[in-house]
Length: 150
Image (cartoon, rainbow, N blue to C red):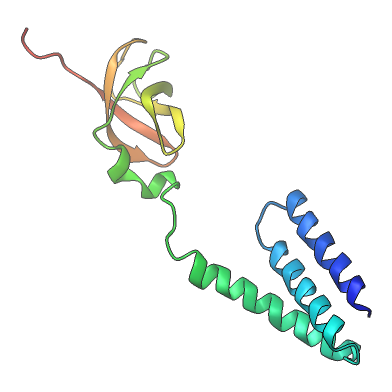
């Protein structure tokens, strides 16, 4: 293959990443761009050598992404984010019947969302202040915030 064919393939794979939002295909596109650059300076590389360079470079990019660049994971998975939500106070948007789902809204977004599905052990009308007691799967367990003596 010629160098420009690798460059076109690399750009095509990078554009395919827009349709496949896994942030994985782009590294194979980067590998193809690297082979295009190598073929530009060493035009006598055989197709087997070019494919070997592409495969090794792509796998090295993928490995580097997952090992080096993604060392800190964001706590956006609800089941792993108990410590960030428990104790937060919000306002019920809908009435919550005992053991039925309702909606609670927070003043500031919690893990990227202002509103969350919630459940309670007691009936809580809309507009009441509630405190997050626990995270259970994909919803929050809330309790009514009791008003202290005035």
